[in-house]
Image (tube, rainbow, N blue to C red):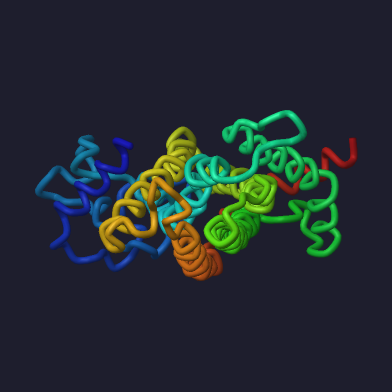
Amino acid sequence: MTVIWRVLFSAWKKRGYPYPSDPELLNDYHNSKVPHTDMFRCLDKAAILDNNSGGKYNSDPWILSTVMEIEEVKMVLKLIPIWSTCILFWTVYSQMTTFSIEQATFMNRQVGSLVIPSGSISAILFVSVLTFTSLNEKLIVPLARKLTHNVQGLTSLQRVGTGLVFSVVAMVAAAIIEQKRREIATRHNTQISCFWLVPQFFLVGAGEAFAYVGQLEFFIREAPERMKSMSTGLFLSTLSMGFFVSSLLVSLVDKATKKLWLRSNYNKGRLNDFYWLLAVLGLFNFFVFLVFAMKHQYKVQHFVNSDEEELKATKT
């Protein structure tokens, strides 16, 4: 993290400097293990040799950065667009631990003489995750390898995209089911079975099996070698930001609808409209993700290493 602040500070301090005519004039260009790129060129100014500050003999990293440090910062910045589109998945996920659990209290939870605790409904989520994680390794990935002729089967971004699609479908299913539940409860004064919640839990669980693995793999593989711990932090921050956005969205919806949508009594509220809102936001977020994903360039060396490891594993 310190490297990022140093590069940004040095680049800002030299913002008025002209770009060098040749990138090879940048500090430590030939010793960089990471090839120089033209993206975020403004950061290259951090490696401009300045005679006023001692030129190449200046050892203060806050004044003069190396090309390798700058390229590492560029790699991190390149992850931000994908990072931003991963947040909404966890916003949807958070509904399974809040509103969907509360939904169950307004439904028939009796199975024979047993009354299922509303919180136990979330077990479906974990069963779904385990099921699709197993299917990924034994069915989906081998099938994808045959279709794409890629040893990875599905790339990390394809996994994330699949997870986002599942989250959108889950919110559509949740909206339809909640609308049906409320209609039956208000018109016929009866409760439908809590097992009608299975589709939305199952779909979100399936999405998590793809999105979680895809995000973790993406951030670890695409981050600079010397910033692996930070890449894990980036991934985990999408989870926390997702729950934060959920709280923010609830507050905004409460203000905009004067608490007509999200009431403590779901039979008098319009939770289904909130789910529809999440579905629309999720769909928009997915298209934004597609744009960023198509423009993203993977680190080639990671694919090479991954391919070699996969080939060795299949041979043994």
